[in-house]
Image (cartoon, rainbow, N blue to C red; front, top):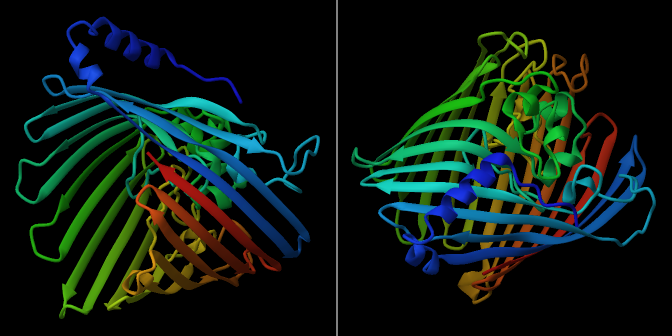
Amino acid sequence: MGKIKLSLATAILLSGASLMADSLGEAFENGKFSGQARFFYIDRTYSGTIENNRNSLAAGGYLKYESAHFYGLSVGTALYSTNLVDIHDDDPRTSASYDPSLFGGDFDSYAYVGELYLNYAIGNTNIKLGRQKLDTPLAGSDDARMLPNLFEALVVSNTDIPDTTLIAAHVTKEAVGTFGNVYSPGALSLQSGYGLGFKEATSGNFRDMGVVALGTGTDTDGVSAVAAIYSGVEGLKLQAWDYYAHDILNALYLQADYSIKINDSVGINGALQYINESDIGDKLAGDVDSNYWAAKIGANYGAFSGYVAYSQTDSSSGTMNGGIITPWGGMPAFTQGMVTRHQFFSDTDALKVAVGYDFGSLGVPLKATLYHTEFDVGASNTYQAGTAWTAKEDGFDLIYQARSDLQLRFRGNFPSDFAPGLDWNEYRFIVNYNF
C-alpha cells in the first residue's frame, strides 16, 4: 500500500477539531462511520490496430467518519484506498497486461485522505469547506472504476426560495481518481473528462485545477461556479450552471427535464441540455468557442423502460479543444457510451438508444440495460485530426441487489472504430458492499 498523504490544510483542520474536543465531545461521540468495500475485475481484448488482452483485479473502497452537529458545525473525513491483487506478477507492470484504470499512476496501490471538511448548517444555508466529493455537470467524481475524483473546494448552498436551490462554489484543487489513468494526456483525455496534466494528480495527489486541465506551469485561481436548480412545477426540473475557470474558459450548462405519468403503468419523459464554452482572461487553452446541445425522450411501461438521445457539437477549431473541454471529470452528456465519449469532439453528431427491464416485478432484484451508441465524427476533431469516421459502441449493464448493503454488477462494452480500425470487447465485474 502506498503512503498516506496529509496536506497542511488537512493538518490545520484536524488540529482545529482536536482543540474543540472538550466542548464538542458529545458531537464526536455521536458521530457515525460509513463506507464501501469494492472489488473490481476488468478484462479488455483489443482487435484491429492493436491485438492484445489485459485484465486486472483490485480491492479497496473508502472508510468515512462524520461527526454529529454541534450548533450546526460538523466535521467529516474519509480514507480512500485501492490495492492491486496481482494476477500477473509481471515486472515491470505495463498496460500490455494490467488495466491502468484500477490503480495509481504507476500501477501502484495507494491510500490517502480523500475527504476532510468542515460543514456548517444554519437555517436553509449549508457551507462546506475542504476536501470533498463533488457531483456537478462539468466537475464531478466520475466514479466509474475503483476510486472517484475528489476536490478541495468551498461550496455554499441555500434553499430559502421555495422549490429552488442556489449554489455558489470555488474549487481550487483536484485529486484524479483511478479512471483517469486509462488515458494518455491529449485531445482524447481533454474531451473525455480528464485534462492534459491529470497525471500529476493521480495516486492521491491534489493539484491545482489549472494544472489538471492544461499541465505543468498553468497554476490558476481555480474554478468558480454558481448554479440555480428549480423544481416547483410537478414533473419539471430546471438547472443552470456557470463555471468560470480563471484564465481558461467560461462554461455555461443548462438542462431541463420533464416527466409525466399517463397512468399507473405508463410514463413519458424528455430532457434537453446545452453547453457553451468561451475563452477568458489569459486564454491559457487558446481560442475556445464551442457549443453542444442534446435532446432525449424516453418512456416506461411497467417494468420496461427506454430512451433515445441525440446530440450535436458544432464545428469549432480552438487551439487545443476543437470541441467541448471537460478536464475535471464532469460528463453529463445524454449520448455518452460506457467508454466512448466522442460526443464532445468538434463537428460530431451522436445517437444513443437504450432499453431496460426491472426484474423486481418478477421477484428478482435485478435491473438490466442494453444500449447502442453512434458517433459521426467530423474531420475537424483533434483526436484524429483531418479524419472523419463513425465510431460505435454497444453494451450492457446488469445490477443485482443481493441485499440492501450488497450489490453485484456485471457490465460489458464493445466499441468498433473507437479510433479508425480500433475495436475491443470489455467485461467488468464489480462487488460493492456498503456499511
